[in-house]
Image 1 (cartoon, rainbow, N blue to C red):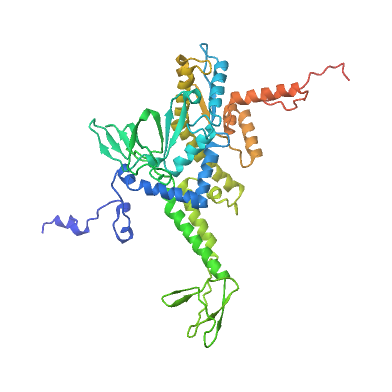
Image 2 (image 1 turned 120 degrees about the horizontal axis):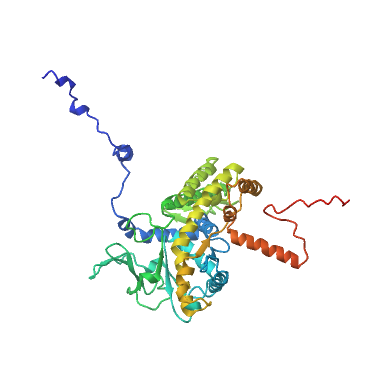
Length: 486
């Protein structure tokens, strides 16, 4: 042994540094992770996830509530608002052209025009796209150009089932079909291979069950989904992380209800030596089965004794446990517990305001997503078709000027305490840290629309001889005093 060997560390005492998150000890034995790509994960799970999400939408009140919250808060009562802000050659707003474009798009959006089936309005279309996006994880909308439609333009919704996730193929031209979507080498969608009939519509179809596809070019299809991973081709249902908890919570509540019903249906029994008069509802392995009807009494057969079963559940912990699980579900879905459960118990102004503001940011982000990925593509396609027909007096050569000037705005939100928020807005305006546009935007308006509405109100009041007693923006001035007046 050398003199310096005492400073050497023993091999068995060497500690290897690593992340605790990769520990494979007994506490992590059930932590099974996957190295598969996004498409590989979705390929075999997408159909079942979609079907379970739809089932919860039909049979679970919280899932149904979630989809309604999205439609109400992302789309709103009147849908996403459109304004045209095109300017003329000298930089002034082209009020005549803008008004013509706005009126034409509003007319196209009336009930019966926007879709090939003639059953929806533009607001209905927005809400349906929002629900399909959340429920199925994606929505497929085909754009049609034909003279039988208003402005020769209409939309067709295709259910996600008709884009067959089991259809995967390499093509001779180098493209690849991934879960029904044809992509090039950059994974850019080139076409969608759509089943000619819904695979679950066999109850109403006389066609054979053989799969037949039609190829639809990608520039005609709006594939609406949130991309969560690089290279992802199809969308994931938004309920996916919460499906186990929602299902288990439903089963837990069902068990509690059954237990409570049994406890409320306590029965009595008569025991006689001969067991005469005994009638069972059914038998299982020679054991009698008797329905637990409230207030009923039965006679037991000879040799049978009864031990009382008195369920004490649901107990006092039921409500606490139920709320705890539901809070986790709400967090996974991006909404507040208060909104999802309609439970306002033990909430204060501060807590409900904080929760409302955070939740509204989620809704605003989703509105922005819908505007970019769905509403704007529909508008620009409609505008091109309408200008080709010259349906509102503006030729196609002006397309870029009006397409780039289109603005879309989501719904506004009223505040939890309107007086406090309004006073804060007034203070911000007076101190120059807020503009009129900032304040108007909080209520789903812009400055031009707000001032125009105020001007119309004043003119209408004058027309009917009503004194307009409220003058906004500090227009009240003290009158000049004439010293000769009394």
